[in-house]
Amino acid sequence: MFADGLFLVFAVLAVLGAAGLILFRHPMNGAMSFVVTLIALAGLYALLSAKLIFALQLIVYAGAIMSLIVFIIMFLNIQPSDLPKEETKLLYIIGSMIAVFPIGMFLVKIVKSLPKSSTEIIGNNFGGVKQVGLLLFKDWLVPFEIVSILLLVSLIGAVILAGKREAVK
Amino acid sequence: MIHNYLFLSIILFCLGIVGVISRRNVFTVFMSIELMLNAANLAFVAFSRIHQSMDGHVLAMMVMAVAAAEAALALAVVILLHKHKSKLDTNVFSLLKG
Image (tube, rainbow over all chains, first blue to last red; front, side):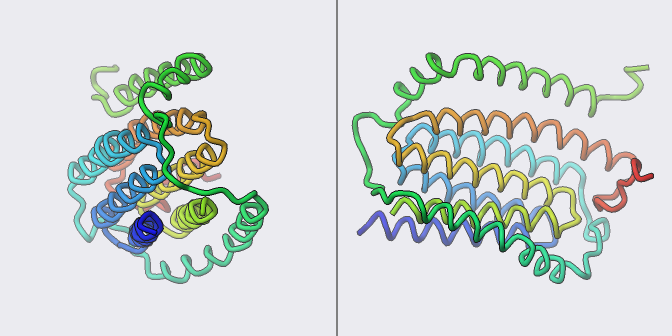
């Protein structure tokens, strides 16, 4: 099947990008490999016939949020000497993998108990802008408004935190 | 199979936890948290494909908005910390340690 092959490619890309994020020393390399993960996840959303989320993942996540992070990393002008010395990084990674392993196996056991279902692309405008928008403004209107307030609060908070100190005094 | 998507989501989430625990660079820790949010998003979309209802898509959009707000605030805090200590090591930031 063509879709299975695509899933395999995107899954491998996503896991490799995430591993690169954890292993690279400089945050810029980590951010670049994280962008690979985000784009691979966008492909997976398309395979799950979530068209709107596919577009939003590319525009909002890989476009806006990651460019903000990359901008800040460049803005701080990080030299290799500024980075924390992590001599015991591999040891910590192996140790935390051992600590996380039981949680992962628990989740795998939960997933295995779910009924099987196919992942064929479904039509009927499933996941399209109109369908999701109708659902968003009918059943999810109150959470939507709360999210808008959250965005406003974080906007004001970011301006106050990163703004000039002298202006406050 | 839909299970493969959920297994991938579990793997990404566990990698995010490993990144948060084991790394000391502020940016890497922050991006690991974003990775965990993305893994949750993948699980939401996969479950909404199982049930053929689009509530998961709406929830994924909410998570994206929360991630954007979190990114704006967290990066402001990182700039502030870098201004004060000019370091990116999470071990340096221990002002609240008793």
